[in-house]
Image 1 (cartoon, rainbow, N blue to C red):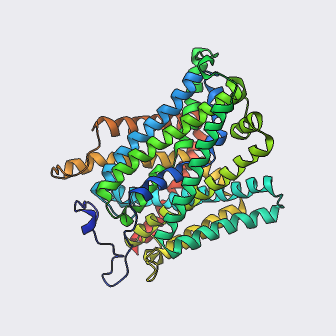
Image 2: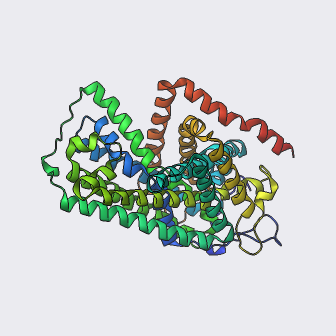
Image 3: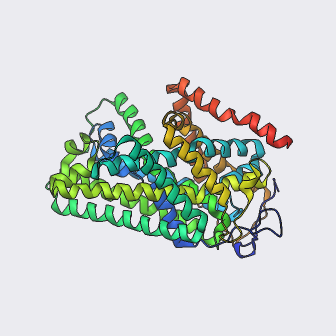
Length: 455
């Protein structure tokens, strides 16, 4: 019920669809699954493409570039530690949607789920599916219609796996995430070993004027946050986690620390292979580095790593996001069939199918790019709003010494919220027209909310 929190242990939390005779979601996810889910959702193509942009944005200062990658990880860690406590307090399917609903009401929670379904999650899946076919075309040339078919086939395969079982999807996620992480580590180690440039001799001083440098650092941070984005999705699967009280805080801490280590290590490898100027002037730095240090043939291996990363990221979204629509439907605020759980597989099969269908429509029509660009900053607004629910929960609840508490409270969530607020405000000031369109897209959910509320 809205306004109530669930403070019992995960082993005592029943999974139902609102009908005691109906099948419920099964708690099958453990700590390893959550860690690999967090890592796999975040690592897409960013680490293979973005480092050159980040280095150029800070005036080719290696020290500043590495610091930006580290600070992006720290900011993600502040949010992740906060979400760890939220997931321990209220381990229900839907994650952030449930927290916003219980603390700030159904309307803002519905708007979050609305843009998540129609733009953010499905648009991300469509983006990954289209990019997957584009990169596959570098290995085996594809015509325009064949490329679209490959994109739709990728979405269909992922949807089928997720309908047939959360355990099966998590196992697939674990394998693909392990493969991509090992590939990045192997690439970084090879570049460090074979590279001819000395990182300690690289420039630590930016070539830009202070005013330009400040703007460049802002651009670099935005790029890095994009590379780190996605760890929030794991909260949606809290209703299928065996021990959310213990596992979510540990998973967020472990997952984000792994991401920071992998990203910084990869950047060091790029610098060793190409040097400062080489990295800054490359928009496909991983392939360029391997082609320079090893051979052009080996550089094609980067394409395989990117394909695995994109598939893994898309699977992780389908594994998590439909749980939000499932929770909305349980509340009577979305299509009722989406609240149904498959009697045999124990998954929100209709919610998964609806996600895959809309993602396929976006991928086939190519309408996702502009929409996703407009509402990305709005998504971060809801991430900050969800983090703010921790203050409401803390005010309501009685002390529980056995429950995980976010370290550094209240500063940990406050700093995360403040930085996100600054990012959103900067977007509104710098791009008012785009921000207005993004907010307009979100507010299209208001009439829909009124209709579902009356029903």
